[in-house]
Image (cartoon, rainbow, N blue to C red):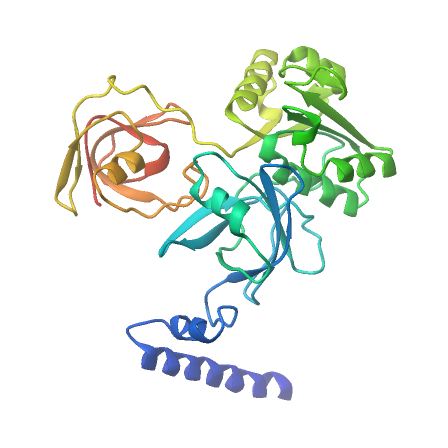
Length: 369
């Protein structure tokens, strides 16, 4: 009892001192001053230092991050937002940790593919070095393993979509899960498979883990060739109807798997995460105008997403993933109709919060930007 009574006043004094220092730092946050001394000393901001850099394929870079004390960990399959300053402008993108959620060192492992038009991914692939400090958010997302763990699991990935499902595999192995696990990964060629040596080692060391490599541009080697279809599903997981499937990959793979599962009537057993923006309607099909009322700007509706149209109009709304998973770009639509490009759903309600990166206007739309 005495310990509890003495700790509360001490904690209260710490918060009082923190509030006092932050008041003295006005108009800037205290962390803005601390980062001038060392970016990794923060009061409230979550940051991470690059501890290790590894480039295992020609277009990917794997970063091991050491977060500051505010880090609360993650669940396998979740994502984080990473912020980096490029030419004086701060940009954020979403990436999924690849390490097991049960990792005890507190580090975060991210594998990032350098996309041709990816400003942040290209920068990190070329410039990331140990000691680089990045902004970081707490983990988020619902693409996670259920508890208790399913008796049978099919993990399907393609390209850089391997990271969240690899985190699931590593977590299951760490937990000594005894159920059947099939890991099906699609890549152009064997040289494009990140973590290839580790995947093989995990399969060799665990009798319940089956690794299946599918190559779309390589006819020799691997286990399967070409694109996903029911014949692939029948070959690697004939028990699919009695399993839970977790899928992350490029749009073509996502679409192919969804269509097969829909035709089989087992969509409820498919769990997905996107890592590429959904396709938008071709320009020319649109009509009306988009009004950014807080900025006094109006532009003809081009048919692109509202995020892209806002940027084309010279505005700079906040965003993170550009894929509809992080909700950073949520903005109030004051009037008009929008369509979600991921789901196809339309929304006509006024004063409704929408996500700019996955919403296209249908006719006239007004936004509080």
